Length: 129
Image (tube, helix red, strand yellow):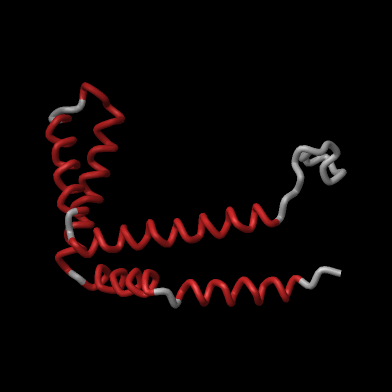
C-alpha cells in the first residue's frame, strides 16, 4: 500500500533544502526590502496606476484621448520599476527558483514514466492512453 505520508515528508525535506539555498535566501531578503522601501513601493504604485490607465484606454481603442501618452507613460513607469536594482535582483532570483522547480518537475516526470505510448491508460474514462 502507498504510504503518502512518506512522500509528503520527502517533499517537505526537499522544499526545505531548496528554501535554504542562497538564491532563495536572497529572494526572501529582497522581497522584504522591496516591501519596506518607500521608493520602490512608490514605483510599484505608479506602475500599477499606469497599467490600469492603459487597460482602460485599450477598451476604447483609437478613440481614447491621449492614448499615445498613456502608452508612453506605461512604458516609462515599467522601465523605471524594472531598472531598480532590488527589483532586478528579485526578478533574477525568481527566474532561477522557477528554473530549479521546472528542472525538478521534469526529473520527476522522467522517473515516473507512464509509458504514454501504450493504449489503455488507467482504465477509466479520463482519456489517458
